[in-house]
Length: 292
Image 1 (cartoon, rainbow, N blue to C red):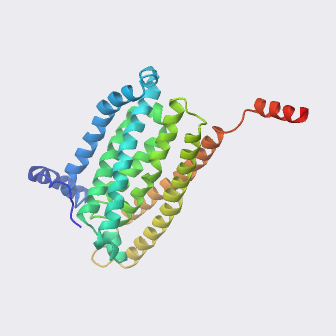
Image 2: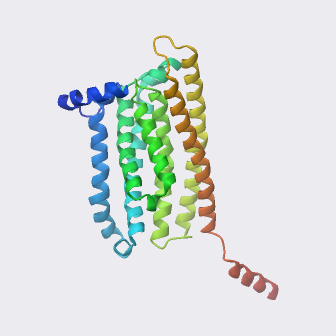
Image 3: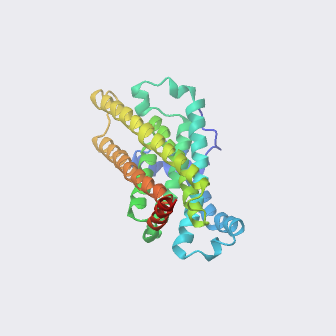
């Protein structure tokens, strides 16, 4: 399936070819424009769109936020936009790209389609932006977010290496299916809707989507990918898998899976905490029942 995006400028292709050759990112020249456009688009959303829209949709909240909370607000805004776009594109490619569905293990490791490369390039553009944002405000986002952004960027870029496991890279983009609910959960806290029915329904959806997309689907895709990589290592042929590439890719995807287990534990605590009755209220309720 061909890349449906605009063709890259010839000047940019020639300019990036030496870098792509040095880093063995063979398909990078054909997607550099998409990475740059995605990065610029999300920076524009962060700097211009989020402050403008947020100040008008939530005038009683946004202008009065602290520095750290306002930074988080804008980052969540970008995350919401990105997750909706990348989920739609990944689902579309998975459904519409008939070529991918016929691939053997060898093609799942080394195969490439233009549409798949586009999805990975747009994801890489976002994760490059996310990494820089995490570095700039690490005191706000934390080291875990920085590590996640770096690992995700590495995985997205490696999908353009030769390319490498581009098939699974697109499948793993669906980690983002739970992100809109996560952002909604965060925003509800900030606009005084903690503990509401809407937050309860969204919290249930968040845990279901996070567990389904990142744990069940994600672990299954990682397991299938590990099997295919192992087959490629055992049957090198004309395209042997470099040891450093296999180890680095497996280390990053495994680390992301471990983070997902850690995060869902925090999410369960966070959602449950918002619907726990204060101990004082429970004691008063027990007293009322005894008096009846």
